[in-house]
Image (cartoon, rainbow, N blue to C red; front, side, top):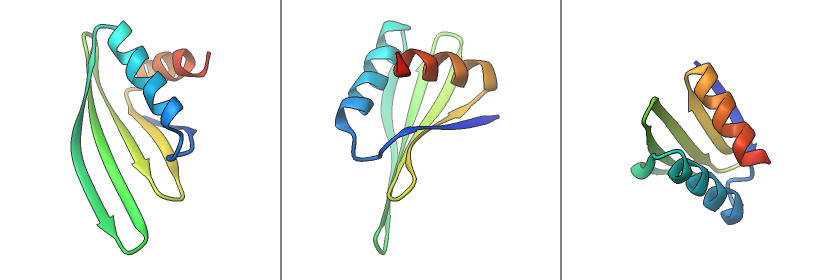
Amino acid sequence: MRKIVLGSECDDALFAKLCAVIESLGGSVADAEWVLGGSQELTRFAIKLPNGTLEAISETYIGLLLRGEDDLVLAVSSLVRT
């Protein structure tokens, strides 16, 4: 299991690029959970791809994280960063 911070949780363009990459790979992104605790906001997104699943997490003060199987996280994060 690998976790990579893609960038700021406030970066709408980054999230849009992540969604575009997921869609180009034949996958989908869905809201899974939203939590508010004090000043901390956390949103989890379920990502379904033809060859596996990932989780994107947007967390205040942490950033936009991508979490899942090593190979899949590395492949998707490299596409998002190009």
